[in-house]
Length: 394
Image 1: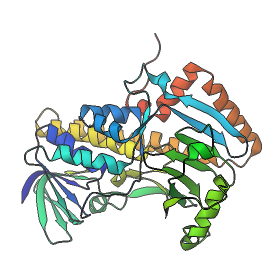
Image 2: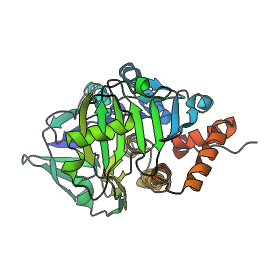
Image 3: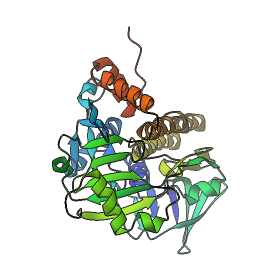
Image 4: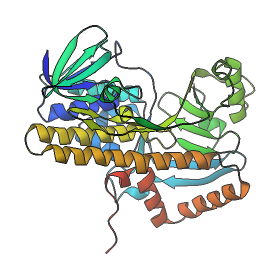
């Protein structure tokens, strides 16, 4: 089969890439290893600039219908309670969407798929796990585990952290793996009743066991660090998970638990995002810890900006140098912005020194009380600054 563009991976990043290209008039085939779209909740926070992009693609209204609009988030201390609450409404002069939307990515992907398949020449092939990617004579061939092959002018790898597409290019994937694994527990308990006064999103400081409490449409998610020396089977054991949840709040009975999963967390960036006619976006290009909700968001930003630049190359409106400027810019964001912000979040949540913790709490309280400082801080944490830095006054 011959196609203009192949996208490998039908997650939110791959489908966004395909939809941008389709809306630009290009035929796209998406190869997905799974037999259907993933039902895993995974990422669930959408920042304002991501909402702007999804609005341009015509899918935001449906996402909002399925999600929760959340205008504030909190920093809390495990022992003393609220530290500061920040109101994203202060960003109203920076974005038409001065809020977050809380909604699992598994609710976005069907919307993207539906929109994509409305375009002639666009298809998604499920159950086709890429096994090799080869470039020759200005064509790229992707072969899958089923033995089928597709040839295209361009391939975009959106196939996750273990990307076959990235590995085919020989690009190194350098960085670190965090010592502790992260445990995510999903519960149908109403945490707002259990912990009165919390926001939809809460970052909880504690030198021994920091937490993230996050509301989604159907459940609350609680993120814990785990002892790096404790076996995985111990950490996901039902009684051990209940013990961790009792530490959040003792209900006098077992928590209603939907599921719990344990995963390693990495901070890695590919040494290049373009190799010949192969491009990398999302987790295939860079991975980071989830503290701040920047993984899926930065991946969607990759998808939109890279696909637009590729579309311009295909129509002759731009050359490869312009495409490289975009993908190198996305790599710079992954290195100097996303990696820095999320790693700083991790360090602050687990700060051991009491004086340093107290100083940071004081800074957050002062920040929340200062509209100008709040706006600058929220532009950074909501990723607006990663796309359009604030112009100097005057």
